[in-house]
Length: 209
Image (cartoon, rainbow, N blue to C red):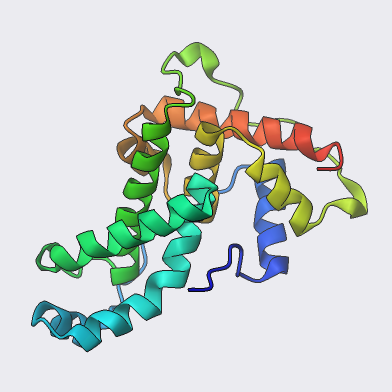
């Protein structure tokens, strides 16, 4: 299967990432729930294999991208994708429709991706509030050379912990309470990791990455 990362519109990507570098960005998830695939989900619950296949095709590309943004590994992202869908299909009865199916599935993907990172144990996330940074830092000018590709390369160079929190907050739309729950850390640690990720990314983007 041909998956691709960063398939969203490049101008939108650059806008959001530039906002991240220069100011705090928040997202509101309090929107009406519209379940577009209720019929497919019902058929999956009834054991319809064609419905399983169609639901997989509808969401696999986006969910792969979520996994890759966190793991930064094509192989691990593929494993995360398969494990997440197996888990989702086995537990469809637990999906109550209070969120979109995509949001419910993405939470499973994110949890699987974080678990994959934890298994690597390449780094730990400090719980000490001494690691907190100020919420705001002065804007940094990057000139006309700031491109989507440069920002993407910069994010990929971030340590796993920084990249995970940044991706969950900015690209996946989770708030710090949700990130803390997902990653098993405190909200304070989530905020400090985001601030450190932003600071590190600014530093990387001062040079050609």
